Image (cartoon, rainbow, N blue to C red):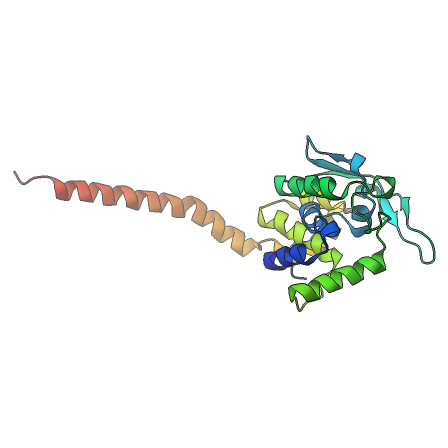
Length: 218
């Protein structure tokens, strides 16, 4: 499982309809599940602390209207911090499109809840408009978020907590290929310590040699 390229994320963000363009930076910036994103209401967002509280999701049942329900597992109850870029996207979205029904952050154009099938159609249209060959899905936004954390040296435990996984083994089984292996870590450790020390010593010797060369003949 390979994460989305950054260019694809940005292209989808631009290709989405205006009332859903903020969903892409939010989903890729928090890693929330689809139901958690669809069920998010403004009162679950702390703009000052830049934290979103996940304690419910929007549940879709065939033949019935979507409704609020509990998160997927006990571990899914969590607080997720978000960055300045996500904050700016949310503030713009709130100013332009306001509250959906029941205070929903992301909603259909007529303010009702998003339905999974309809959203898949919207995302597919955006993919075509952006010229993306691969059929990226909402779940890929979550994987992209996880890959960003791992690329910045987040631990298994940190990624598990942010994604709301039930246990660390689920995180390891899903994303272990994205963490550096033992051989790579060994090389990086040696390079970071000895490589840096040798580079500094070589720099000092070069400076000493240059100083000696510049001394006038007696």
